[in-house]
Length: 444
Image (tube, rainbow, N blue to C red):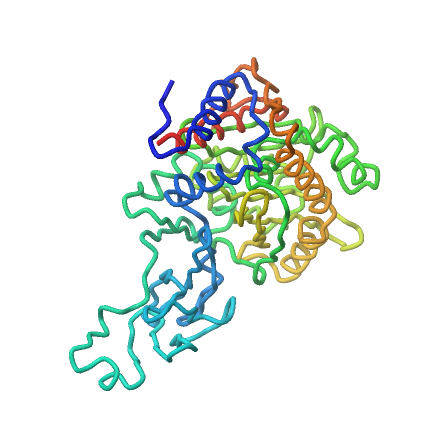
């Protein structure tokens, strides 16, 4: 058993030992979902050393375009400079610490501090200081006082990630084999993806780990949580619809995917709900034949990257109300604000070369089902908040949650993709893998 790193309080050391003892048996203590001292350790050992999703390149296509994004409580201006280079600059004036960016998105060649007027180019260089000579003398060197860039900034297929640790492994190494599953959406079109407007954002009183569980491993909840949608005919009539398919995790990384197919014996058209011309382009767009064949038979695709990014791509049936198909794609960041409190950043995306009519319909589909007021979304957030509350109660925090589903399930040797795959989505294998990685980082 690995020892807890020094600097941890005796109380927290005992808690981590309890988590370590129970994780392989699928017994996770409730307190991990709402404990103030644990959250401080998560900030230090997980979010300060992990690759965190910031934005998609299509959000800042032109020189001067910027969006404001966060890693923990650190605000970063993600901006495309006049030279075309994308940078992430800490939104903090080097003079006295005021925010220099006063909007969540826009286009600017410069950022000026409203406190004392220090002015920076959109590449971070300080170029203007009021009364410079009178205030600071002739020896003042503006080159030493530019905005501070994020220590690491890298991208994968248009997805931009930041890392606060200058010694962190590369993004490519961090992602590992989960890239195969990311490419099932990022490579569906030769032109890639684009966002459909700025992200929706809302605050939920829950833990970031609880929220991502639903997108990482918990297809089991659809039986009850979303039962009303089944009864209304919005979700498939078969209440076990999310069970069919594969659950895959990447050992040692914490990442996972759920690839949901059609029920046994059901015949569905390839790329169910996508226009025929998009299917034809996808035939040559995917890097491998195995990825194309997997994507064309997939009904619902979810991928979660450790620690707090998820995407969801449900392929919906043709909807007569919209006279066509309405699949959708959403990217998610489960942004931690504190113990038992998160802000959800949620984007709708679509293939760049999709027909305009399709882009509008997929945007509507996102808003109706997975926007902040979407039917699926409200089901989930209501439950997440109650679980996090109970995890902080004097009695509830001592309970252990059952993550034993599929504990004796054997891996599927015939799955064509990388990782450890199970031919059933009713299993907690992905969550057990996540918690191993979570504990590993907390102990190091």
